[in-house]
Amino acid sequence: MARVIVDVMLKPEILDPQGRAVSGALTRLGITGVNDVRQGKRFEITVDGNVADVDESAMRSIAEELLSNPVIEDYTLRIEP
Amino acid sequence: MTARIGVVTFPGSLDDRDAARAIRIAGGEPVVLWHADADVRGVDAVVLPGGFSYGDYLRCGAIAKFAPVMGTVIEQARTGLPVLGICNGFQILCESHLLPGALTRNDHLHFICRDQRLRIDATDTVWTAAYTPGEEIVIPLKNGEGGYVADESTLDALEAEGRVVARYLEVNPNGSRRDIAGVADPTGRIVGLMPHPEHAVEALTGPSTDGLGFFASMVTSLIESAP
Image (tube, rainbow over all chains, first blue to last red):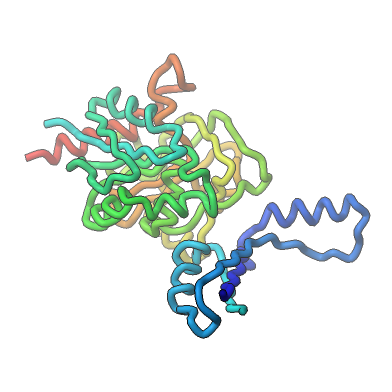
């Protein structure tokens, strides 16, 4: 089995109110030195076969067309054993 | 001539019945469309109603765009089928790339439900022709992810081309860029709107009957264009 990891983050210029709320909570907890928090999504897709068998272009299509919205989000993709 | 306007029901749609009723009150014939059925039954126009299609999982509208009915709606919308997306329907139209931009989490993170004053800025769309330019209306707004965002060049183009259909007045309720409440495609046949005109078509149940104009615009357009 191989795993495809897709991390999806809001583009830097898109406001992330959830991340801002987390950042506010950290301040209330007395944590200092935190400059910013951005919240994203991580997908772990388990596929048959080993790393060499993974159809990376198909996985990128999934990441671009379903897992992320390219208007507001960026994604990174990596394949692990 | 009857104006047959389809209303799609997705799993999680909430406002399909109200949309159908608004169409009926405006003089049209509502046609029930089902998410799993690619057949749109020869309708003259489609309304994508509000709600939480597919539970809003992943992103609002992200899964709905792959529903069988949407395959047909997207294909026909590209060749002129008028489509009005309200709230979740607006999110689906953006996810489907039939409209530019996206709807994101309200900047204050709270779900809002209020009667909202809007200004109709574009009356040259098939869904807003019954209004006068600059007309102010009050209709319900209820959303958790209604913040309209797009890059600056897209926002500039929307304004330059007169494709901002409606703007929020008095208060920006969700952090939408440039107070945008609704936008249109370049043809004026596809319109997305975050507030809910279908909830403001009768004095008994709405804050006004100001929402009726969206449906009346479409019915009039269909009747006038009939051979």
